[in-house]
Length: 154
Image (cartoon, rainbow, N blue to C red):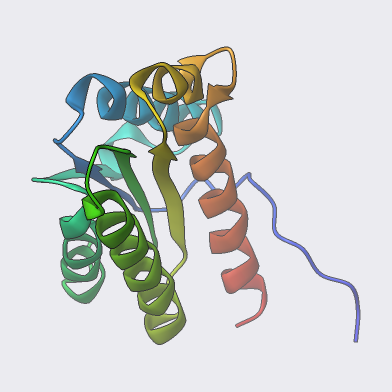
């Protein structure tokens, strides 16, 4: 068997960004980074769909609905959970993580994990276009590559 890997140069893709509204100043920046990356890799802006969900917990269902309704070749799940004073952080971030992983495995559709899980708002901003880059952009690159790899392995 030959060595195979995906490329980020697929122009015909339909991509869905599932974006959490909770912590919106951060998730908007993740969305902007993802959109800029997709367009820089020649994904037609008309093929980029945005679905907004209330919070990180709802990312999995939003992504599942986009996939099962045939709206996309790949999904970017973009959200942000910031640790608070209760264990809620662990439940939401673990539930979203497990749900998104299971969705990709069950459907075979690339699901990009763009969920920030940070200790505070400063860390989140650093990862949403600040000193640590933009995780929305990184998620978009991963989805582009995995969509291409899926097509090559058909």
